[in-house]
Image 1 (cartoon, rainbow, N blue to C red):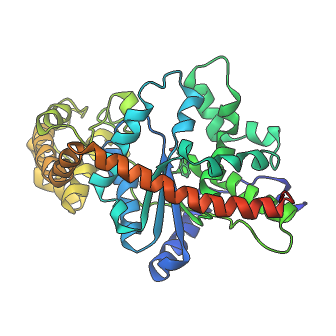
Image 2: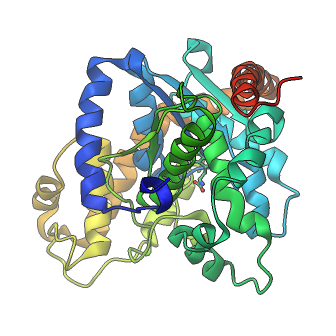
Length: 361
Ligand code: TRP
């Protein structure tokens, strides 16, 4: 076990480089790949999610890659006390996914909450025996979340959810996981678990692939305060289902600076740069060019421009979302179908896992 004794969290740059190569191969050979990614159902999605991850998933789906989207409802229990809204959030998340272009009727996209897939959850038990407590305690993302949660008593689920996440990824033998930087430690742990499982139990045949992270090229969208990542809990987000008026009001209140001449300077003027970036994503024009056109029109002009282009850009998505929301039974059917397929794939994997572990009766 010499080689896989240590979890190497690697460098971000190396992962980015590998992602580029992977990206190319996926486009050339989509049938070689199976994508799994997902979210915690903590609320509706916002514009940062759309440009940061949703569009990337839709793009992969369009390349013809089979895509699994896990709604990680169990993970919600690790860092918060409330669970009243999980069921509602699962449905709202599914609405956002489909409105953004993920298409469960394509036969290529599966959306499911992992709490409904017992076969997936069973993998957690053997997986836990393949890692040490010390390794789980060293996970940098978990450490940050513990600090951010402000909780004094940390439940064991907080330390072990990355192992559960490995089960999310490996139950369907996915080999590509589109994620943001904060999820890379979990991906590395997943790779280690796959490797150790194969080494320990499956010397002659490989049961699990070592999935690769796919870092998206999408830029990080800041919130309307311009100082931190867009996020609902930080109160700086534009939700996908906001009305046009709400969107206008939020943008009006966005933080900018006193310089009337609009320039694109992400380092020196992050707030203005973020609004320009959003405009750019909606119009396809380079942010520098938008800045030039606004010139000395000041933040007011920039904001009215962004309001107009963003509302225009989101119009079809919002229309589709509203239509879908009037037929929640369809959303439920999507999830039921997603669960059914996930279970059947999970059952086959679990069979293989039991055989490898000598647990056939
Ligand atoms: N931890 C992820 C998040 O907080 C959600 C998640 C759960 C996930 N299981 C996953 C992401 C599997 C990618 C793959 O956003």
